[in-house]
Amino acid sequence: MRALPLLVLGSLPLVLACDHVSTIRILDARTSREPGGAVVTDVQLEAAEQAGGNAGQYCVSVHWFNPPFDSRTLERSFYEGELDSTEACAADLSDGDQRTWRLVSKRTDLPVGTPARVQVHWSNSFNVKESVFAP
Amino acid sequence: MRGRSLVLGLGAMLAFYMQAARAQAELPVLTPYPAPPPTMQPPDTSYTYASQSYYPSLGWIATQLLPSPEVGGGRVHRTGPDGIPQDSTELAFGLRWQLTPLVYSWGTNRRITRWRSFVIDPLARNSGSIELNTSFDYFFGHLDRLIVRPGVRATFPLVQRGEYLSTSIGTSTYAFNGVPRIAYDAGLYTMFGLFGVQVTVAPAHGPLTFIGTFRIRYF
Image (cartoon, rainbow over all chains, first blue to last red; front, side, top):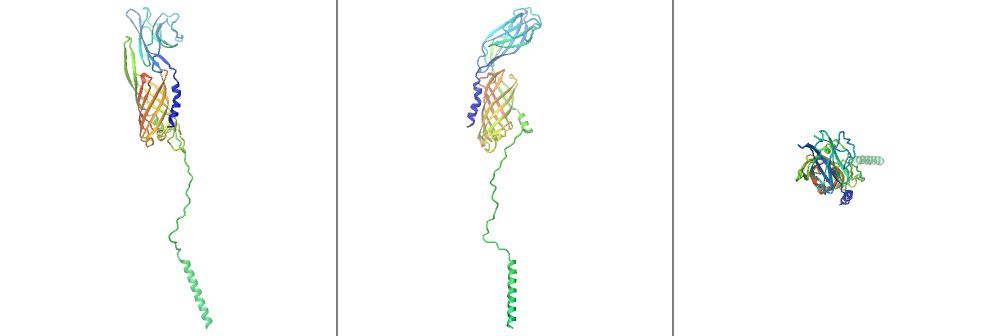
């Protein structure tokens, strides 16, 4: 019975760690081209929220750049000099949920091999995926 | 004539007494009856004991490397590019390895140390103990990752000081996709704790809400 107070004491730091952390990962990003020339990017996201709840508002976007693209470029919602960008925002992901977004470029003349940065932005945090190119 | 007889008589008496003394000297020593109790050295009342000195042997390493099979899973909610959501419960097979850096056992003899580190004899754990432990779970399938899970667990004896049956409750924390999680576990063990079942529940973690482990562990 002496173990119970020790167990409770040992668990206290775990219980006190109640600042709910959430994150949204990019699991995959695949590109294809429509017959009209627009580039379609399917972005698969996965949310995680510590308490099992909603991960909150997020925006997923694809930004196209002239090559070569410097991957050290700081993440932003909008980039100077980008060729094209498409964005979608929602707040529909809870802990463990996965969603695939289909983002279609506005321009239909993106050359083959044009580099893109796929990113998801939530509560002042970014997750990005590089090495995505126009097919 | 009389004097000569006196001398002869004295000589005869002397001879008789000498003979008697010789016979007396040759008599066997008679043991008294009843026989006196045997005298023995007093018992050694001092008490000495040695603390065990466990060390990581090859056998210990081999048993630590032996994984416990497990199945984990939970709810997965997927929405495709067409916007149609799908709910499913997915399971993944996994393997669990365990290390116990520290144990305090209250079930062992009070004269020996109650602390153990890494090498934990079954009696120390199953006779009543609390431990700091770390589990390493590797899940295949849709999870496909290694989860390192430090935690605290208390084990209580149920039958025969835990050698026949013991139970445990515990809690642990781990990171999944960079987000810290908390899990709770309960277990039932038999055969000196060698075999058992352990259920780990993380109520707030959708994709890995529960883990059922067939625990194999000796040290």
